[in-house]
Amino acid sequence: MKVTGIGAYEQLQKATAKSGAGGNKPQGFGEMLEKAVGKVNENILAAQDISERLAKGEPVDIADTMIAISKADVSFRLLMQVRNRALSAYEEIMRMQF
Image (cartoon, rainbow, N blue to C red; front, side, top):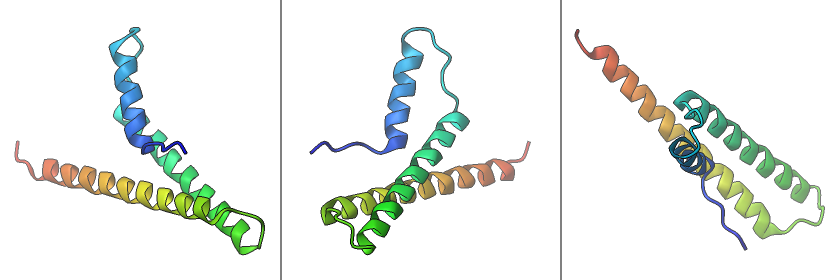
């Protein structure tokens, strides 16, 4: 069984590796965030799909269902924490006096 990492962390590693070698344009924060949101959406849709198939009585491994649901839950929670931290940083910047 292969365990995959959180999509945002993997993308950060890939972006760091690409920007360090080969002279490619480094990936911006907005692009990285957009891809992470897309990956979280994919995880949620996959969990929903496998849950629906299980509810319909189709032959689905319960362990795979639980893994998909847990993966979607953890990735969504991580995304919410990133959003909360970014919003907090934005609010702190807006409070600064110039």
